[in-house]
Image 1 (cartoon, rainbow, N blue to C red):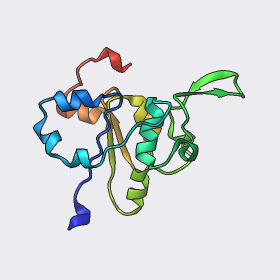
Image 2 (image 1 turned 90 degrees about the horizontal axis):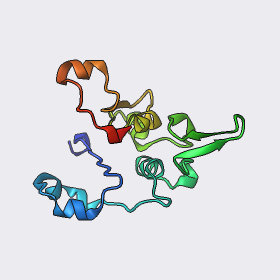
Image 3 (image 1 turned 120 degrees about the vertical axis):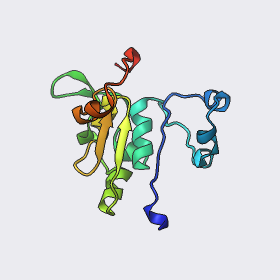
Image 4 (image 1 turned 90 degrees about the vertical axis):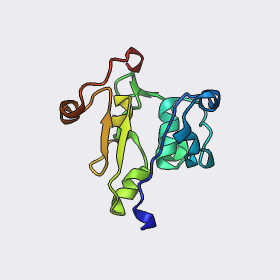
Length: 146
């Protein structure tokens, strides 16, 4: 069935098209990636762009307007890195309501936390689940992730 095919969304945050066009990635280049590309939200920061992609909404709808916000209650700057801050459902949560089994695999744990939901499996290579480490080993250390 057409509707049962897996859908893969690849977000290359901060990646210039020059890198994609110069890279030898025949599978990626042969995919439909070039048919469904989007430009960045402004300001061009990770959380705004990833939330816009995964909700299909603009920042004024999903509520993520930066990587940080000022918390008036505590008088401190706080990261916008938890799903409780989102003001709308992600496309993955909506897919789950339709009987799909969505999964997010991301490098950064802050993005896993931003999109975690009881209805969506979320995994980060920064903090991988022990069951995956047991099966495939720990990911290589990559200090720029932190």
